[in-house]
Length: 635
Image 1 (cartoon, rainbow, N blue to C red):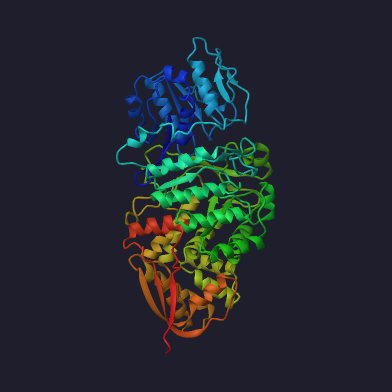
Image 2 (spheres, helix red, strand yellow):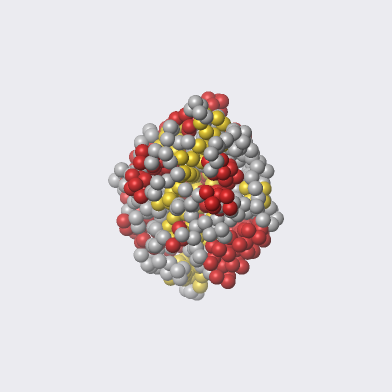
């Protein structure tokens, strides 16, 4: 069974999808008697060598997703060439729900759609018969004796008593792989109640169906027993059910007893409820949280209507931002670029509105993928909204650098609609990267907040002006950094391969452009602030005040090896900004003081700083100090 992933410094995902299929099938004594499960293929190695290493295989199943689809196709062809009698099965999100794959790819023998456990089991039983009959196997496509594709009846149902691949010992041999750390995932339910047309999670349009909590709890114990640091919950909306709080309690209790798992990644429920808040508070208090998602996707009403998306009100969003901030719980907001109805102006102003509403931590901007089984993929929507796409080789960020000569994966990404042309799309991405780098990572966050509150300079005006200055100054450090970003975005919009942002100083990982730009400016810390201070003089600060503000601004950013820093200041900036975050703005007091910034766990080298503060910390503690103490000097 093949479910390949890229490495991230020696870490790989356990192949959960195909693992559940194997666990269910091998729970049947008939399957055990007829078949031997040889191995899982999870590493992207040379496909010819993989094919040659197999031992006369009878059947191979592939889970084809965006990050491994091309690899799966190349390996399937290599297997078919070396072992022509081997049967090839494909499933996964990249398959259209029709016969396309069988018609276009002769090396594929079977397709399984939607939930695969029961069809896989029934398919193996039929293949074990002298005269197999596949007509009754739901969610299956195959060729008849004349080579014609037959698409069987589809069903959204699946069994809730599916055995766990962890508890069944399905991964026991794989776990013995030397020098590899595995990441695990679990699911407490399947289904999604929402129908956003840019998403393919709701392909089945089925109600949420719950798995037994006893199974979920036992899987959490397995994850802890195997000392897995990082795990994910595969639910579409964790926290939407009242019982999800029990799952959170189990995770907290297990970590307290065993120390594992260290971190949990979830897709948090969009619901605004006490359950969601309680879960996030518990996970944050035990250090397991990867931050709370307060997703908006867009603030443009027309775009939201076009993709069948409903958000909480902006007032409620602001209240939640404040509530989480006061509890010390990190938040982040997801925004999608390229939704039909969005314009350059609405997109950029929407980003700045989020900041105005209190999102000073992290905003993640994703370009809209045109997913095969999403509503936006449908021809009538593509034509209606004037959607233009590029099939672009994409980088898997925070994975090990992959040589461009190796097998590339692609995604179909929107680069223009009838409300945002290609030029506006490029400009919006550049604006977004700039706001993420300068505000969300904190480099100019406090300058922007001060100007907004005291000089009536809107966030949109501040970051638009800054963006213009950056783009006009290729001879400056900041301009040269963002010129590289712009060049890559233009390549991207023309369907050309992005140059992966890799710098050995920060490790052998591929970084998103906003993170790469931030790291480059941090690496040239003093030079950046020297040139930006000259630019900021345009805002007519009071004499010597800008120097004081920049002194605070520089000190509040976590810098490698600077675990404790005390700075003499003439203003109590910390209290002033804290009260703004608490929506209780007070006057900035002029008082001589020492402001101390501390972060005991701050790495002392760039590689660890990049990994633990910028990557891991982006959804957690972040790059901005929060442990700050002000001591008046009385002078």
